[in-house]
Length: 421
Image (tube, rainbow, N blue to C red; front, side):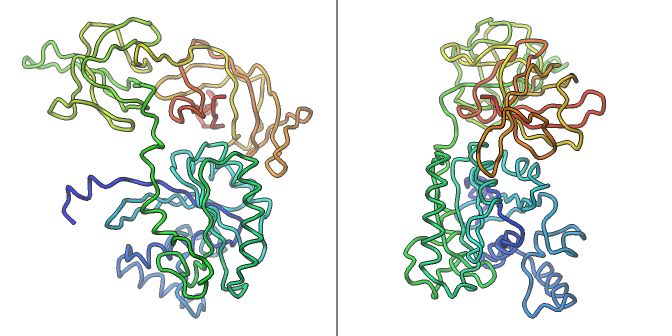
């Protein structure tokens, strides 16, 4: 494959989740191994590690469980990112922990993903962690969820076991209004239906996991309608050749921008027109979501980092009071009396928590309006008031402009991730 073809391939970001020992790391190891995406020295290293542990077979989970504590305990603790490519597509994998106390790690790993793979142990069926991870994937508005019913080899590849679990998951998908759900019976350890079709489950007529990952449509996942360009940096070269150059650099959050577009600058609400769009050393005809570029305007307007350039006929919400669904990250519980720093795209403002509206029980999906003590890894709905007006969209509409983080001003630690309602 030539370098240009590689760069032009689409990129799929996906995350894995599931209960402890459901086989997440083994599944990723199997994907990498069977798609020939690991180097010989990596294979030699995990083969040697497997022998030292006394395993009869190569433990593919060692490809992702990189921390010593993970290898010793046989679990995933931190989010492990892995990269691989096939002739059809590039992939970034976020292998997230299954333990309840690492819920915040799943939120981190899934926040930028297109797709979530949720593993279910065929012997145990749908567990509390399955409910938790499906809820979080739904809360984060992941466009696609793939349920892999794993360890089918340990239930003799029984079709009835798969159908019973699938029926329960179908009810869960309907309840959470998941946009696009898929179900695949697999054995990550032996490779059934991961990269190659299983000869042990001829009753299953669907696709393999890798084939689904290679071909699932993700172009429609991008928001092409709402033009949002958070300004990161103002470019003013101090050179004679560019004495009058003024450009606004950043990454497109959503929408498509072209020269000639009528735009409004937030928060000033001043209007202008896009004169040109630069990428590196050339002008380009348009820029798409998640692409970086420099926009030049027809008018000289005072614009700085944190401002946003938007299409004039499609403005975001502008307010200093709004509600959030938050996942609390810190050991110290949420303290409504404290002031926090709220960061959204390139913009930030001091804020206070006006109210804690409810805490969500992720196992039952019920909202508790009585016990509002929000501890680490818990999900809650809060209302915040910022020191200045913010410009945003709902998270369901725009995952970039609808997401925020809360920072403890005293320690500069990120204490929560939030999704604007």
